[in-house]
Amino acid sequence: MTASFEDEVRFYDPGENWSGVECSACGADAEEWWGDAMDAPAADGFKDLNTKAPCCGGTVSLNDLRYIWPAAFGRFAVEARNPDIADTTEEQDLKIAECVGTPLRKIWARY
Image (cartoon, rainbow, N blue to C red; front, side):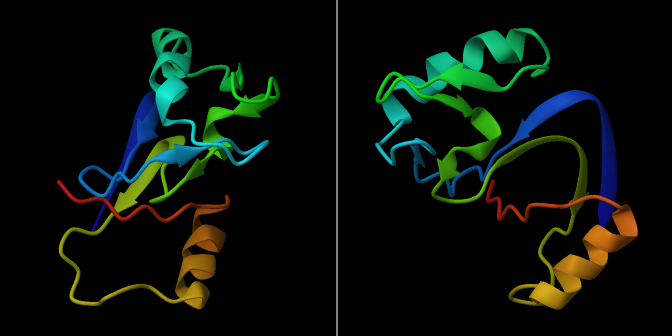
């Protein structure tokens, strides 16, 4: 298991598990506009994740979109490569978040 701290916010994606993204405001498929919506925030170090969703006109956070396989923005990651368990329990997830002192999002990445 490794932990990493980044100087700037980055996008943690599920790699080959990517299965799309939906608008958190209206539920529409956001795949068509998501890439373009990522460009300006990426150029600015993901300091502002808010964007206007073309599907419904709502203001949404890129972090709160419904990623079919979970994804997230952050500066910290705990990684376990090829663990000998199928999954962590909710209790284990909560304990890790408690130890770190912040809510965490579990991302199953395949590269």
